[in-house]
Length: 238
Image 1: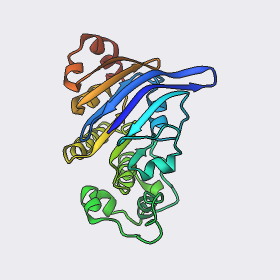
Image 2: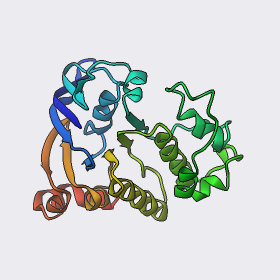
Image 3: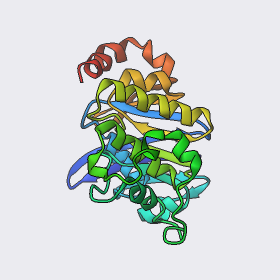
């Protein structure tokens, strides 16, 4: 479904991502983990068309999307839920959800929130007329996820979905991500909570200073002594 080959990303003279290659197969949940500043979010932003690439190739559903603008990539079924939620604080929950359809022609014509979405996110159904600014951190993250699903993505990109959340909300978000994968949605997630990300991942990549230093099945990496010593201790102290 997604194949990234030899991707390099620069910020001026600083190389944030150095010739990285990853794959996401249909129906898989793949995670990119590692310490802060490793290049994880830069890579995700390049895949979704937000960040320009210096070199490399990004192929989604058999089509080369390298260099395409973000709005065109969204229309192809690749949707990113950004770090920090990026909600519209002065809009209601309903309006935030409808904004998820902005990239397609139904944005102005279809103002119905799917019942299936309300059933998946009952807390949002109870607060459709509440302002985005009134939500708790966990509720705001659920709204950001729901907004991403409004576009019926083929591949969902999640950038630090548990950042700044209380432990109980972190568990709820990971449970939801695993449930979406189990229902057939392909997911690529960037996450600093290494242990929890690996526990639900079919495959994972560990980045360090813009390079892949470890990769493999999530369960296998949990038993990797190098990862345990170098990353899990850091993740548990976050």
